[in-house]
Length: 354
Image (cartoon, rainbow, N blue to C red; front, side, top):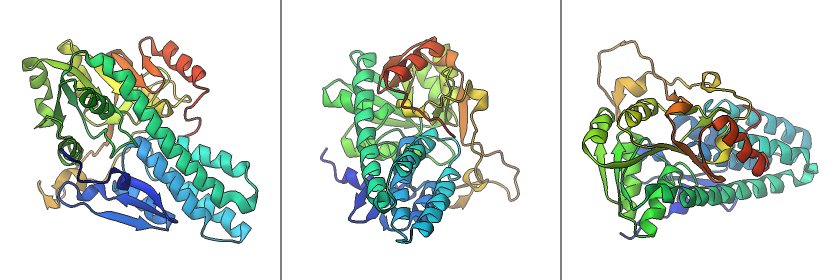
């Protein structure tokens, strides 16, 4: 199938403005916004118009480049940048790529003459964006051999170009299709916001990749009755021991995969590793507004004033993870050795602050 959508419009710099696809409107409308105000980027991240751990980080650095352009007065610019840092840092607490990207921006600021700050932040944003494309491509290359001759891949949430510059878990599927390895994707709908049903299905259809949509609770049955080759998801934060935070429902998938003897893989760039965090108990898990559970597509689906626990992420213990597919290679247990080794080989490309 010919791609009808310009994938560059998911997120890009466009002549002094940031252009981005509003993912909350998919799959029914393709709405692309453009802004010169970093506050609009913060809002887009909070509203999930821009989402996916790597893409959030890229958007934040573009936002910092916008913030640097708001004033020519150096003192005012410094205050504005600090305000922007705080706004982006508080926008989504779990996705560590955001803090990794903001730290790159802080380092660029510290090394830049005041009058060069806007240009250097923009150059940084463009480099971070291109770097993520390369990382995603590497994840696809390293992950492809794990699929063998192909088959059925079960995935959760959205891990394609809508989440990272080239996709994380779905980058492996994209590469398989490019190399004519037959793959069918079973797509969890991914409650409560239906990122699988709305976003992953849309991406796969755009690319002509065979897929079937299932409700989240059907995944264990699918594993028992279909020859599933692998379960592959993305990640929002990985602890030093390999415990991984991802979209709520991932822990259930990993448990079911172990029960049925199916490999469970995490696919994420090394920038998703938080080297400060020893284990998953230390990962901050975002809780969102109750309306994300009490309503669907703008319509209330339960009784008024129903108490809600709207956790956006859960943590999958490392013992349930067969391997972590990164841009530095496939990491296997014990992760307490393989993760530090990979970080050392790559020069420590990880989040050092949260």
